[in-house]
Each structure stands twice: as C-alpha cells, then as structure tokens.
Amino acid sequence: MKQHLIVLDLDGTLLTDEKVISTKTEQALMAAKAEGHLVMIATGRPYRASEPYYRQLGLDLPIVNFNGAFVHHPKDRSWKTIHEPISLPVVGDVMESIQEFNFHNIVAEVQDDVYVHQHDEKLLNIFTMGDPKVTVGDLRSYLKDNPTSLLIHPDAKDADRIRERLGEVHAEAVDHRRWGAPWHVIEIIRHGLNKAVGLSAVAGWVGVPRDRIIAFGDEDNDLEMIEYAGTGVAMGNAIDDLKTIADEVTGTNNEDGIAAVLEERLKLKLASRI
Image (cartoon, rainbow, N blue to C red):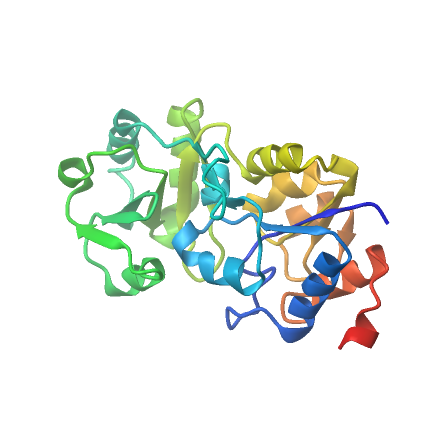
C-alpha cells in the first residue's frame, strides 16, 4: 500500500478523557508506522503541552501547534519554522473592543511564554504543563512581543456576543475558535491560519498528496483540516458541524475510534499485533 500521512488532533481525538493515549490506539499507530506510513500531530495546544505525546509515539515529523500559527520540526532545526503571530496593535484593539462585555480573563501566549491578565488559579492550571514562564498583570503593560495566540475566557452568556464583535471589527486581522466545555474559551490567532495550512506545508515537504492524508478531529478548529484531508474522520464525540463535512465518523476518543479506521483503511493486521 502507498504511504499515507496520518494527522492527529490531541484533545478529544488521540487522547482519552483522561488525557492519555489508549493502548490499542498507540499500537495501531505503531503498526502503521511499521508499515511505512507517516504520523503527525496538529493541535491547538502549544508545543510544550504536546511534546510528551510526540515523544511517546516516537514521531519524527514537524508538528502543528496553536492551530497552525506555529509549525516546527522538533528534531530537525534545518526545517524552516512557520510562526505567524498576532501584532501587538491588534491585541490592543481586541482588548478595547470587548471591554463592554463580561469576561473573566485574557491570556496571551508567545510560543511557550504565558501572559495572564488577571490571576486565576484554575485557568493557570491549564497553561502550566511544560513549566512555561508565566507573567501575571495587565497585558497592555507586560506584553511586549507579538503573541502566537490570544485567549479570552468569557462569561458563558457573553461568549457568542464577543465572537460576533470580533467578526464585525477584526475579521481581516484575526480568526477565532471556541473551546468545548467546560471552559468555552475563545482562542484567537492571526487571520488566515488554521490546521490545514500547517498540514499542507508538512504534506508538501514529505511528498504525500491530499488523497493519501487521513486526518482525525473533533472540534471546530479541525474543520479545515478534515475538509482538506483526502479522508477526513470525525470522532464519535465530535461536534455536529464536523460530522457533517467528514468523510467518515468513527468511535469516540474513549472507544479507540482512530484504531478502528486505521485497521480498516490501511489493512493493518492489528489483531495479530495486540
């Protein structure tokens, strides 16, 4: 069988609800690699929070982080890193435009440095994986570099209104997504970026055409990637919008949905390997 490129979202896809890779899914991915197929990660997470899974799977391709705003090769410094941050003036404009709404916090990430507008222990717990440098205080005073991403933690009742305002005022400067429950955080990156942009760069580099890309996802930040891939797979726990455009819907992230697709599509003799 010709070489395929397997692309994995992390949360809600590769990872179970306990944030681990199940034994069967890991074995399926290792079996695919043994057959000569390629495996990569495309996630909204920063690299520091995805590195453990990259290493666990023994990956050796570039990784897509921050939903396409940062793409680099952890094992090959000669690979040209892609980093497309948001300009500081746009950050200031975004902060100004949402002041009339209720929100709990704003977080800016400059690759692996974290800037938190107001101290929030629960929110900080999300960002401390990988031991980043954390600065707490008014972003307008402390943020000096263009951030890779900007996150708004709104009151649930104002989340849609904030997204509407971002679309009205900043549509040409930024794109935004919404995290799933329980946080409903609005994640903002530079306009025109998404996982498919990063995936396209990696696929071109390894020479795998779109019709031999199998991508897995579950949330709205996976929409472009699932549509771009020759075989776009929505997890059983995916949002309805993703299931609608996907070529296939598999089991949930807790049901080894990835393993089921790979075993069938790539003709893996997985049962004999486990």
